[in-house]
Image (cartoon, rainbow, N blue to C red):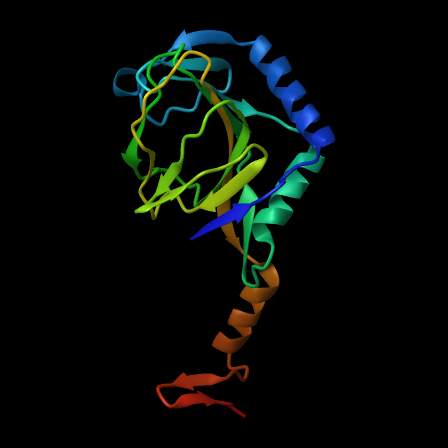
Length: 208
């Protein structure tokens, strides 16, 4: 499952996001972080991780106003009839890939943990660097996003040459899946004997 989202935010909303990031990052200590030594999936919401092996500078646990979260949730859940995705309560992950931090790299990998859906949002960039999901490449523009299932699909960024001034800034909005209450109640009713269509290889039989 991959889905492109264009023009995710208005300029006013982008300004709010930029301000939140700047204010929260400014209060944190920058710490050199090596996943192989310090832990690959260790949440650190009070520091900025400088990951030289990935060529990135990242801050987890960035908190945005409710209206930003409401908009993102509405976008992600648009068109879904049976399931609802909810943002995790740990805040969002902001990163900048830039050769001044090391050589940017993202090897093919599956995520671990409970986040079943991610909106990868490109805040700003000065260069192109496609996102790989399985055997497809997706080039985001600024203020565009792509929805993916990080536990199910390998995702990565292709190897490329970097120059001074190249930068790609991203925000990862992490979601977990929760079954819609009304739909779950309907399933419980069917389990208890309520009528429902029965599917067969010849078609659908309407149960009386």
